Image 1: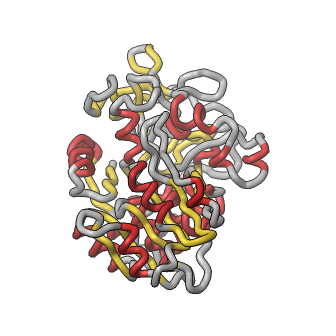
Image 2 (image 1 turned 180 degrees about the vertical axis):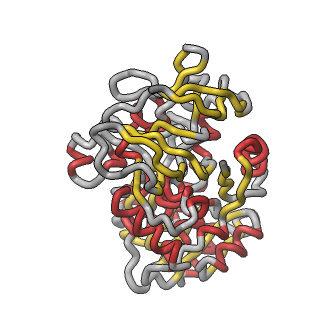
Image 3 (image 1 turned 135 degrees about the vertical axis):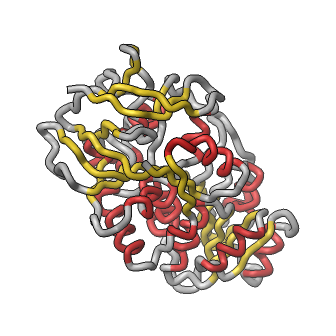
Length: 368
């Protein structure tokens, strides 16, 4: 049967989040009801809420949820009521990339997760006063006290790990970590440069510190974040407001350039600088997402030294194995996500949004 719950609704592009009673549909065969304990706030949520992406509004966002399973549909086999879960993106499970272990590149990823607002069959998961709302965001729409979650978004995790400490794994953290581990794969002596020291960038720094990379360079304009990057494993930092990026990377690397660059800012100017700072056969991973249709100009001859520019979604992670491994690292203290997290009561979501926009909070986590 359907369930009434409290959710943060965005009424229209640019409007604030408004707490409202909504109704969750009855769980389908491959869905579960999850009581939310914590959910991270991500720049993707803010981009959709601003009207920058064609998600159907009014709607319920949220895609870094963590909670406890309360009920499951008849075909759900991976989790049971009482299980602790981290929520991540969903996928069809049937296309070539899903079968190949790359569900972040699912053939239907965009509509299932980011812009569709409905299940794959077109039905709505959330309504208010009898009218459907945009929902099924990343298969979860976790800005609510309870969420109706797609089975492929559910990842069972160790119940001894506080859920507020691992909620960001669902998107931002696995994106930064996956950029390093799944794409760059640094070898002994490698140089990794991370452009932007927000939640994704600092996650990449922490991931690089767990590899044989010799030089780990964090680049940002905020001194406090550069200091934190040092504490989390960066061997060098560059203040982009004071230094020329290309010159700074050349000096740090003895003129060789960077073997790997993770671009998290979404600025095409920064992306271009990152490509130019690559060593021969170096790779830049594009993580930051500017508005749809944004283009960047590159020096074609500069690419002929074997440089690669690779786009990335959600760390190219297979969530059922990747996220539990990250949880184990958090539990062991080897992935200190608590250094990034600021917690807020769910009712203070707009304050969390303001603090994130002002740079006061790296990774806000809403508590229920």
